[in-house]
Image (cartoon, protein in one colour):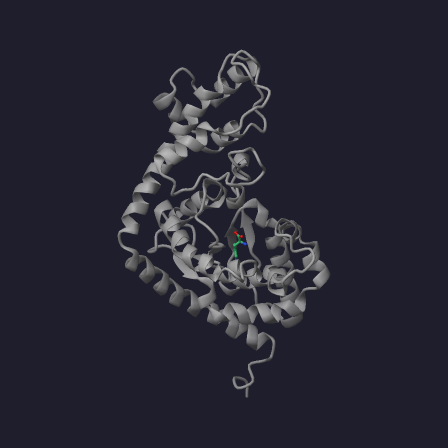
Length: 349
Ligand code: TRP
C-alpha cells in the first residue's frame, strides 16, 4: 500500500516554535526521508472559519503567512503538495456523508473539542460547523488515503475519531477508506512546548509565542524575559529543572554540538541541569545560551522566508498548482465513496 502523508494547519496566525518542534520540523524530515509516496500539506482555511466565521479577512491574510512558514522551514513544493482546503469541494461533500456515521454525543466527548469549546467561550452556543470539524478533519485525511498524519499531540483525539469513522464507513459500505495513524515527535519536550510565560500552550491571544518569522532582536527579548523557576531567586539557590520553561526549550532545541560552539564550559545539557539543581548557575546565563541555540535554528528559516517574501506570485502559483493536484486526488476518493454508498446513479447500469 502506498505510504501517504496528509497534515495541515489552521491559518489563524503565523506559525511559532511550538508548531515547529511539535510537527513542522518532523514533516520536513519525513519529506526528505524519501519513505513516502505522496505528501499533502493543507492550509485548513475552512476549518479556521469554523471558529472565525466573522473574521474572514484574518483567515485570508494568514494563508500566505502559513505558506511562507512552510516554505521557509524546508517544505519543498517539488516533494510535497501544499494546498488550500476550501478550494476542494470534495472535502465538504465527504464531510456531509461522514456526519451520518457520528453521534452528537461522541463528538461532545472528544477532548480536543471539549477544551476548545471552553477556550472559545462557546458553551452557550456552539456553532454547528465548529462542532462538526472533527468530521471534516476525517474527510481531509481520508480524501487523500493518508496512512500517516504528522501532527501535534493535541490532535490525538481527532485521529481517534477519524479511525472510528473509517471503521464505521468500511463496515457499513465495504472496505473503501484507509485507516491512518498519527506520527508524534519522539522527543517528549517537543510534544507540548509551553509559552514563554510558562503557560501550558503557546497561543497568540496569550502573547507568549516565539514566531518563526520573529526577527533576531524580538527572539532575544522574548527569551531573556522568559519565566523560569520562580523559587530560584539568587544564583546560589538550587533550581528546579522539571517544568522550567527555559529547560523545556533546551530539551526541545539543543544538541551536543551547541555546547562546543556556544558554551564549552559544559559538555551537555545534563551537566547544565546538574549545576542548576546544585545551585550556583544563574538564569541569565542559561537564557543567553538558549538564545544562541534558537537563533542558530531560526536563522536559516528567516533567510529562506526573506527569499520567498520577495517572490509572492510564485508562492501563489505553488498553492494553485498544489490545490489542483490535491483536488484530483480527493476526487478519486469521492468517486469510490459514492460507489460504495450506492449514490453513483448514472454510473451503474
Ligand atoms: N486541526 C488541525 C490543527 O488545528 C488542522 C487540520 C485540519 C488538520 N485538518 C487536518 C491536521 C487534517 C491534520 C490532518 O492544527
